[in-house]
Length: 260
Image (cartoon, rainbow, N blue to C red; front, side):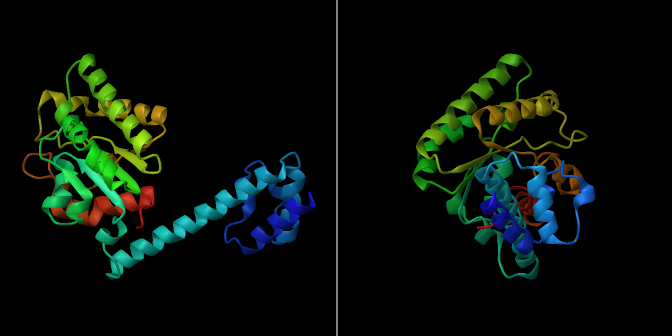
C-alpha cells in the first residue's frame, strides 16, 4: 500500500489531468484541490486493487495524455508548415483502390509507401501482400471493397472470408505492424446511383465485425466525407486533392494518432 500511495502521489502531482478521472466511481465529495488528499481518497476507494493494477491504470492515463499532446503538436506543425504529411506518414504503408490512389496521383504521400490501383479489389492486395510484408511498415492502412460490392449474401461472405485470409497472413508475417482497415468510403448517391452502392453500409458493418474478431483496427471515415461532400468529383465517387490534403489525412492523424 505504501508503494502504491507514493507512486500515485507522484503521478497526481505531475499529471495535468487528475488521476482520479481514471476511476469514475470515486466519491466526488472527496475530491479536493489538494493532490495528497486526492491520492488518499483514491486509495481508500480502490483499496482492493493491487499495486500492479493501479500502476497500469495510471500509466495508461499518462500515455494517453502524452499521445494527445503529440497529436496536437503534429497538427500545429502541419498548420504552420513546419512538417508535412509525408513526414507524419513516413512509417505508414497504404494499399488500396482508386480512393487511395488519390494520395499517389495528387503526389501527396511518398509513392514508395503506397500500393494502389484504380479499380483494385482484394486480388490486388493478395498479389502485393509479399511486397507489403517485405516493407514491414510500422502502420498499414488498407482500403478495399468498393469494387467488390455485391447484391447478395454470398458476395459479402466471400469478401469477408478473402479479407480475413489476407489479414491473418499479415498478422503472422509482420506481427509488429499496426493494421488499420478502412471502411469503404460512402459515395454521393445523388450522382453515383449503381444499385450496389446501397450495400456500402452493410459491408462496412461486416468489416467492423471482422476487425473486432481479428484484433485489428477499423477506421470509419464517413463523417469527414459527409462533412465535405463538395470534394466529390463529377462521378460522385472519387475525391479532390483538397479532400486528402486538407481533411482526410488530418482526420487519420487525429483519430489514429499517426505522427511519424
